[in-house]
Amino acid sequence: MTNSYNPFESAKAQFDAAANILNLNESTRELLREPMKEIHFTIPVKMDDGSTKVFKAFRIIHNDARGPAKGGIRFHPQETVDTVRALSMWMTWKCSVVNIPLGGGKGGVICDPHNLSLSEQERICRGYVRQLNSLDPNKDVPAPDIMTNGQHMLWMLDEYETIKGGHFPGVITGKPVGMGGSLGRTEATGYGIIYVLKAFLSEIGMPLADTTVSLQGFGNVGEYAARMFTDLGGKVIAVSCWDQSKGESFTFKKSEGCDIPQLASFKDAYGGIDRKKAESAGYEVLPGDSWISQDVDILIPAALENQITPDIMPKISKKVKIICEGANGPTTPDCDPLIKERGIELLPDFLCNAGGVTCSYFEQVQSNMNYFWSKTEVLSKLEYYMTEAFHDVYSLSRSNNLYMRDAAYIIAVSRVAEAVQLRGWV
Ligand code: NAD
Image 1 (cartoon, rainbow, N blue to C red):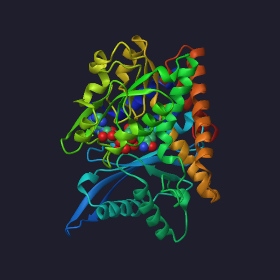
Image 2: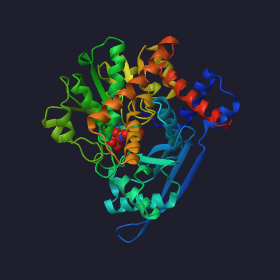
Image 3: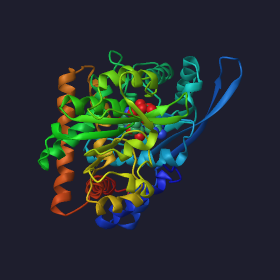
Image 4: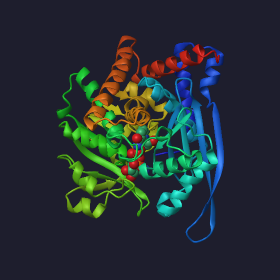
């Protein structure tokens, strides 16, 4: 699978398509096509061996017309500024499509946590907050993303509160439960995908319990999507993930259906599955990209961007009826026409994976009230928001004969365009 695509070019191409359909004026296009603010900085970190390493980092605010910028901070050795730009733009559309009062932002640090001790990671987190100097519960509110978690967020919160001299739990989300975090946040993105999928299957009259899935990625998103999907009676046939020790990905397959809690028990901290344990539990271990060629009804890419490209389209089985995008930007724009041509229904990323940010919004609300809801309450509100958002997108797509990605873009972009126009920015 190729990674030569630039995600920011993809994000802009998708935006341009929506802007053309909406006939947006030139200044609105110009404003929404680029991030409003970019901060590039370095974090000097004292390493455990006494040396100092300097890490490159970014925080990018795409647009905050509808509310404070919201978006995760990723730790990744191959992080690029264009990936962070694209992700910040997708966050704006994501918050808008689920109709929560937040804008879009994203952050990243070029580093590989696999090669860093916990105390080195803590120093990166604290350094990020000190150097960035722009976080604010009313302006810019980060969250975890690839290779960051609740512990990283709590170190960042602690550094922020130390600098400010008070408690500001609303400045960051994805905090551990009991420390200002919301119940249900861990499950929210994965469950949100399945709430959307369930609503879609019900619209097209396909019982979820009769469907099969192949999944790429078994991290936070993939695992909880798989758990909810199998809890509802569906079968996950194959799961692909990265093997850090081998430096390549593998697909774990069981034709009669994977036992998701069992596979989860074979996982390392980064979402890799122990091959030996899986083999002895009867899983076939196949090459990493075999997840795409399985004879299943539904493909859920939930790992990385740029995984479904024109050159791999022929490998997708004729049986596949739905691509349900869990990751951000897993499909390249030049693939959309091919997906339409094949008659495959596509549930777009920024709708499907908006459960995480929706629950982050709930976390902010609870943090600000200092009153926390039960998990059942959180998840029922989450299902409501995700299902409403799906129905908005689905109705527009059916009434105007639109591809669902285009319908989602039209709804999301038009809400943000309206906000910048009402504020008098354009
Ligand atoms: P994660 O780090 O928890 O898990 C990533 C998974 O992908 C792991 O199982 C890893 O082994 C696998 N993977 C990595 N490279 C792979 C490859 N080449 N082939 C197959 N598998 C590979 O990350 P996550 O939080 O689950 O996020 C996954 C995607 O979902 C990302 O695109 C992220 O931006 C997006 N997303 C995450 C959230 C969230 O709340 N965590 C919310 C919205 C979107």
